[in-house]
Picture (cartoon, rainbow, N blue to C red):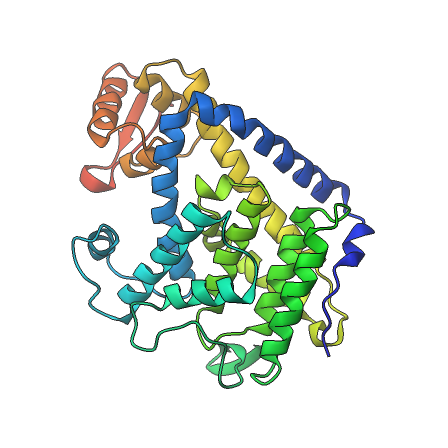
Amino acid sequence: MKSFDYSFLKEEKLSANYARLLSEISLMQGENALHKVVHEKLFDCLQQVAIIESVRTSNEIEGIATTQARFAAIFNGVKQPQNHAEEEIIGYKDALSLIHTSFNELQFCEKDILRLHSLLFSHTREGGGAYKKQDNLISQFSGGKRIIRFKPLSALETPEAMAQLVLAYDEAARDRQIPPLLLIPCVILDFLCIHPFDDGNGRMSRLLTLLLLYRSGFDAGRYVSFEGYVNKYRSDYYEALYASSQGWYFNKNDYMPYIGNFALMLYMCYTDLHTRIDLAENAGTRKVGRILALLKTREPMSKAQIHEYFPDISVSTIESALAELVHIGEIEKIGSNKNATYRIRR
């Protein structure tokens, strides 16, 4: 049976590429403290945008979605959820909000894990906050056939496994020889392989990832959606998860594919965040200069995409800046109306 012991991470030899990624992540996190003081308004705006993106994409990964208009209405409390998908979307918002506001008080313990799961399903009839009552399988349909990808622990084994997982994490987290950025993906992989709930395991894994990152001092996910990058590179994520789960039950699995994918997703969050900060710092105080600098580094972008990068700039100001840049010949407009994009004039 699976046992949980992360002491091997003391001796884990990383490839030069992964070692560089983790080193650069730590360096960029150290720089964030100063950036937050200098760009307080920008960080506040980025956090609001990231919460929206995280709620949308983490549910989207599981096929839980609604229209853009309905999402905005229920997210902002203008309308009440009308179906199960919308109830789950609001549940994720509630759980994520708790992590953002109270991560210092929350622990990686069974009580708080069950509390987060309860919040996740607090707007649904079935509710949450309890481990699975029946065995489950991780499967997919391929060529019209259902293929079993992984068989998690049985419902009978789950409570003891979760108790042991929490104890193993607590012991490893207190060991200064074990880097948090190696420990966190290993614990999350084990959580996913236990698959402790009847529903919501994927979303819970992403919530717990953020909780452990924030508690370890790595908070880029507050300002750039970690879930958004998992969603964008979903196939790579699932390939890494599959590779690292092979032989798991008999303690013969290799955590490195999942660690590597986790490190890459987190690195992209940090580089994205620092790109936005650099644009704010180096493009001058004029907002039109910031927008021009962004377009020089990207493929054609829509007004909405530009606003995601600069949430501190209003949509009307972005429209005015784009019109000015088109007028003076710096950029060109492609398409019209809502589908229009903008790029540097060639």
